[in-house]
Amino acid sequence: LKFAILPSATATQTFISSDMFFLEVLLEPSGAVKDVKIEHEGKNEQQ
Image (cartoon, rainbow, N blue to C red; front, side, top):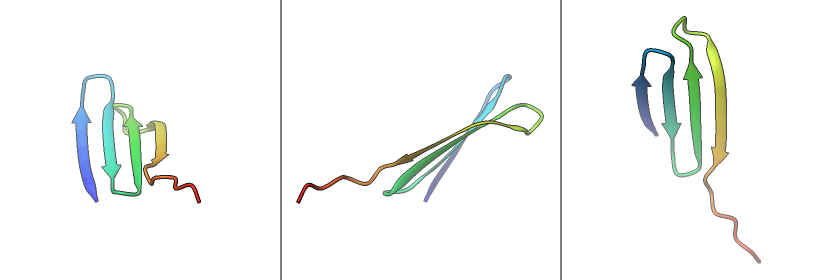
């Protein structure tokens, strides 16, 4: 897993990623969750 935190004056972005998924959490300065995005990063294989 990879972790990254990008603080700013208006919000803090937190990223958690792996080979299978990507999670982005946007936090307000108070610590409240403003938005969450989840993406599956696996490849779709046609059979």
